[in-house]
Amino acid sequence: MDQLQGSGYDDVIECPYEKSHQIRKSRMQTHITKCKKNHKDLNYMKCPFNEIHFVPKKDLEVHKRECPDRGLFERYKYDISTPAPIQHTKNVITPEESYAPVSDDECWDSYDDKPYDPSEQIKNRNVIRKCMGKTPSEKKAFKEAERLRLQEHRNMDL
Ligand SMILES: [Zn+2]
Ligand SMILES: [Zn+2]
Image 1 (cartoon, rainbow, N blue to C red):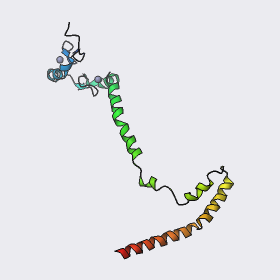
Image 2: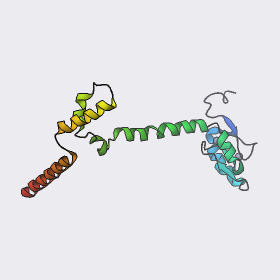
Image 3: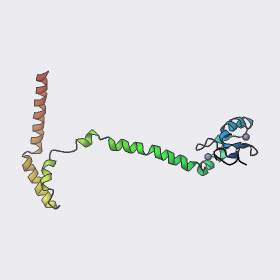
Image 4: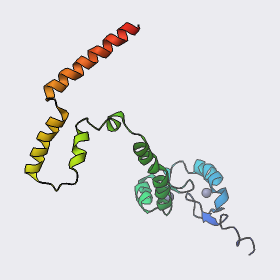
């Protein structure tokens, strides 16, 4: 009697090939490997959730749905697989994101307190134009000139 109580890991379970085989859980894997050879006619498949679950191939789909170890397995899978992608996307800032602010934004800050009003928005836009003191094409020309200037500078350094 003493032997049956205790760890619980060493529970005696039925061999999936032969119900009369009462095998200790800890020895089941070894037994199955041997017993399988005597039952080659039976097409048994190993349960993906538990190494000692062997079920007839035709019943495997049913077993996979009903396997008592499925929950554990899926929780484990969930635990290890979810944190990784989240960390990945949150920690990595793409260059595009870090360069997001545009020069025009500086002017918007001074109007933050005003309530939203479409006509106000239009006025503000005009103010921004003035505050920048440049039309888009002028800005473009300035940028281009600046680019050329820097390029010349670099060429001189070489
Ligand atoms: Zn057996
Ligand atoms: Zn199973």
